[in-house]
Length: 309
Figure 1 (spheres, rainbow, N blue to C red):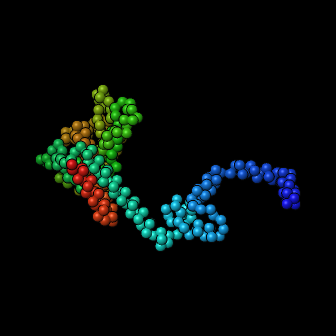
Figure 2 (figure 1 turned 135 degrees about the vertical axis):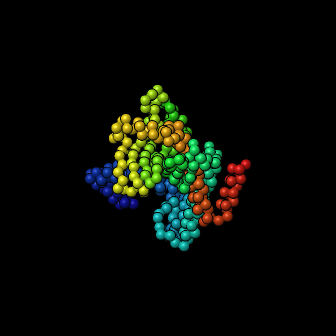
C-alpha cells in the first residue's frame, strides 16, 4: 500500500514539473457542458446500474425509453440504415405528415372562405364580358367597327394594400391583399390590332395632384396585322413624347379603360385570384386525402359541416 502511495506521489510531482496536470485540469474545466449533460442523460435513461458484460448486453438489446426510433441505444440517436423494424414506423411517420397537412388545409380553406368577400364572380364588368381560363382572364367588348379585348393573368399579382399615411406596425400584418396585374388592351379593327401593355403604378399620386392622377400607365405600345410575333416592333411608354402619351391615355379612356375601370379591374382580379387560391388549397387537400383513407375523409367532412353551420 505504501508503495502505491509513493508511486502516486512521484507521478503527481512529475506532472506538476511538466505542467501536464495544469493543462489537463484547464482542459477539463473548459470541456463543453454538452458532454456532461449527455452523460447525465445517459445515466438518467438507465433503469439499473450498468456493471459487467451482462448489463452492457442488456443495454444494447433493450429499446430506449427516451428514444422513439427503437435504435436500441439509451439516449443516443444516430442515423442508421432502415431495417425491417424501422420500416413500419417510417411509413406511419410519413402518413402522419400528410394527415397534418390535410388537417391544416381543411382549417385554412374554412378560414379563407369566411374571409372571401365575393362569393360569386360577375360575368360582366362595365360592359365587358368576362371569360376565365385558369389564371388567365379575358374581358371583351364588341363595338360597331372594332373589338376591345383586355387580357391579364393573376399569377404573382397579389401584394398587401398599404394603409395611407404611417401605418402602425401591428396593423400592417392585417393589411388587405390586393391583385394589381399587368394587363393588355387590344383595339382590333379588321386584321389590325393596336395594342397597349399597361400596369398599375406602384406609387399612385396624391389626391391634390391635378395633372397626373392616373393609377395605371402605359408600358408599351405596338400595332400589327394578323397575329403578333417577335418581329413586331414595340415602343416603351416611358420614351414616348409626353403629349403623345397623354393622347394615348385619353384614347384608352374613351374606350372605357379609365382610372375608375382600372380600379374595378383590380377589385375583380383580387376576388378572382382569391377564388383561385382557395381552389388550389382544395385541390392539394384532395390530392393528399387520396392516400390517407376514410379516417381523414371523416375529419374533412366534419369540418365542412362546421363551415356550413
